[in-house]
Each structure stands twice: as structure tokens, then as C-alpha cells.
Image (cartoon, rainbow, N blue to C red):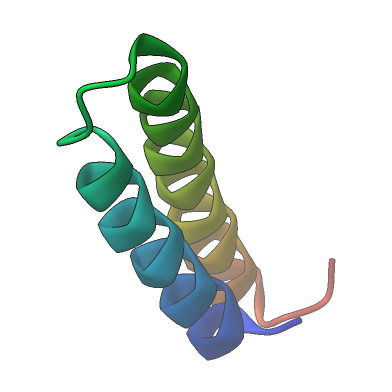
Length: 56
């Protein structure tokens, strides 16, 4: 995956995570936090790939 793909998937995961965090169910809220963090990590990975020229 390239920088753009990682950033798009990361943003999608952050949005889904934020929506899940609005739930009244504690388990769903916890899943939302984890999903948001996953999205943040994907965006960081995309930025690293972009900086290295997609060679990783």
C-alpha cells in the first residue's frame, strides 16, 4: 500500500472509531478507541512510506 491508500484507510478507521465511541455500550466504545488508534497508526505508516518513496 502506498501513502495515499494508508491515509485513506486511516481516516476511515478514525471516523468509524469516533462513531463507535458515541455508543452507550462500553465494549463498543472500547472498540471505537482501538479502531481510532489503528487509523492513526495507518496514517503515520502512510506518511513514513511517503517520506521513503514507498520503498518499504
